[in-house]
Length: 117
Image 1 (cartoon, one colour):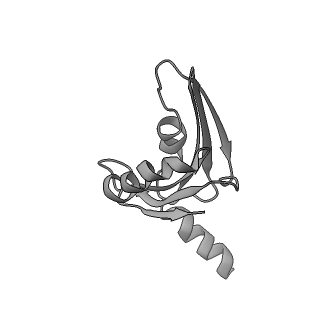
Image 2 (cartoon, helix red, strand yellow):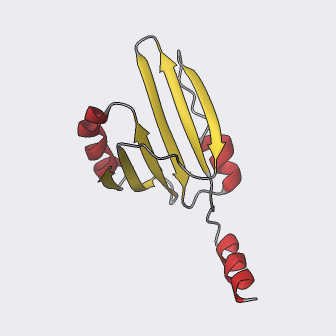
Image 3 (spheres, one colour):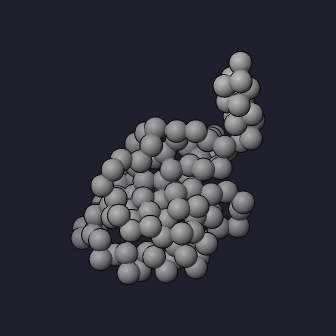
């Protein structure tokens, strides 16, 4: 009974549980893979907006998963989504030297906490 009550309170809080999307975008000389782990975005908004990037001139594939896969070189934890109270964890895969640009963006723009893997 106690577990059911706690689960119910968690779901009523509006927090997503076990919801992420892997976004893989490719262009002529570009190959980027990130995973967005939902923390507080309403599930319908997360799926229909946050995980549906419009990247002109790029091939974009989106896969919904329960949680982000292992192998990220860095994670921006508790990243705030511009102009909203919503948060997500953004996992970065690929070229680890990109962390030099992503870490400051994570900390300043997204007000997140950078964690190198």
